[in-house]
Image (cartoon, rainbow, N blue to C red; front, top):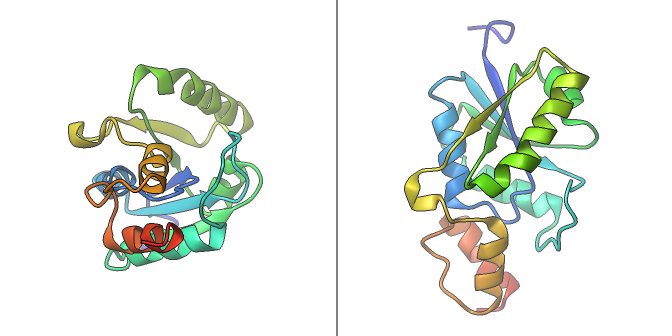
Length: 166
């Protein structure tokens, strides 16, 4: 299959840190996409206290998805629709954990549609086991010495432990 025929999805986010919920959504996207580009935003759309640099987050993504030849990891700056268009993506994946996520994600999807009506947004709900999970919650629990090993892959856990000197 050549790149003109491949159905490419972009899964954007800050991934600070990457959680098993993020991994689940990326892998499940492969059910209906030929390739997924997990893309770290260089500029956060929300004001966030970031724990890892963009480069560190990209390294973690690449370690976690190393065995997945249909998942690529990259960064982007600027408008998501411009990045998606440049990479030949047809749709953007966004996760919805709760109703509270919907309003913001709906507004972003509508704006992206106004900016480029050729790129669709698909919302996925997480596996029930991950419905409560967020990167900010993992950061907070890890910073307080809690065990987050069920919520992140080994490369991410190693970096969290290094960051918090455990």
